[in-house]
Amino acid sequence: MKIRAVVASLLSIGALVTSINVSANEPIQPIKAAKVANADVVELGKMLFFDPRLSKSGFISCNSCHNLSMGGTDNIPTSIGHKWQQGPINAPTVLNASMNLAQFWDGRAKDLKEQAGGPIANPGEMASTHKVAVEVLQSIPQYRAHFAKAFGSDQVDIDRVTTAIAAFEETLVTPGSRFDKWLEGDKKALNAQEVEGYELFKSSGCAGCHNGPAVGGALYQKFGVHHPYKTASKAEGRKGVTGKDTDLNVFKVPTLRNIELTYPYFHDGAAATLEDAVKTMGKIQLDRDFNKKEIDSIVAFLKTLTGDQPDIKLPVLPPSNNNTPRPVPF
Image 1 (cartoon, rainbow, N blue to C red):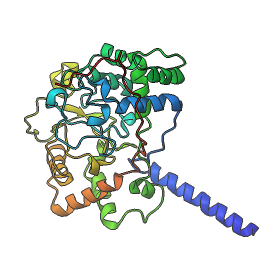
Image 2: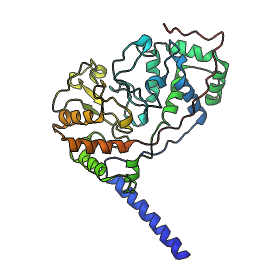
Image 3: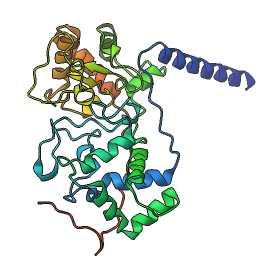
Image 4: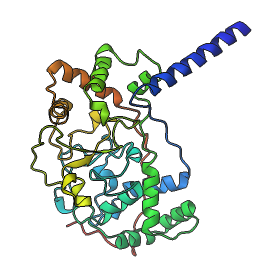
């Protein structure tokens, strides 16, 4: 029995060493499960994420554009805002967004907390104001009780609102993908075509920008390195933040985690399929014309990046009352 125990222990150590070595030698690392520091703040943040009363219409919530049933996005080229306004840019996924160096395509928000306050007061999105959003929440005794439980007092302000939403969004990570299992040593997790696609992904230069645990999100890059990208979109990228001409069409590199779920692709949502996206990226970013076999292999690899989706139980939101500011949907 002792010999068996020793052998089992050695095998376990060998598997661990293999896992560490595989991950260390690759440009991509496995995603780790989220660690919740304050469950009460996270639960409050979940309620706020799903509450459409933060919008002027009482109809649009964070989940409207970052639908957790659809890969953390809305699967349309650009999002729909207040009074059916067309958004200026494709909604990036909220899944694994905590791994980004900044938020929004142009990186204008330094973190999830700063990002969370933007859409609430944006006239083209939720179209409310921070003042009105706070008044709505403050008017509801059950919400004040949740704020007291989460923060120690029932004070409601925009700082606490965005802190809670960000805390919830930080839990929206997706470990457990087949690719992560392969990285951790399970060589049966990927088939030959998928491995071939990953090797091509690395050798052709895709991993130069799409690397790390999120397979992206860690740097800015010009969209159209070798050839200009033709689009009707007016989005300027980092130039809109810095004012520098050299930052025109420089965008945050998006994460490729769960990429098969987050179509359509690019900041203008113009690429309807992964095949279209890979073909375009090969040409304008790498000056390479991928053939059909190569595209199919890369796409097969990209689909292995889909991880375990957040298992969310929808919150039951407390009702408004006679003192709650009324929505203005039309």
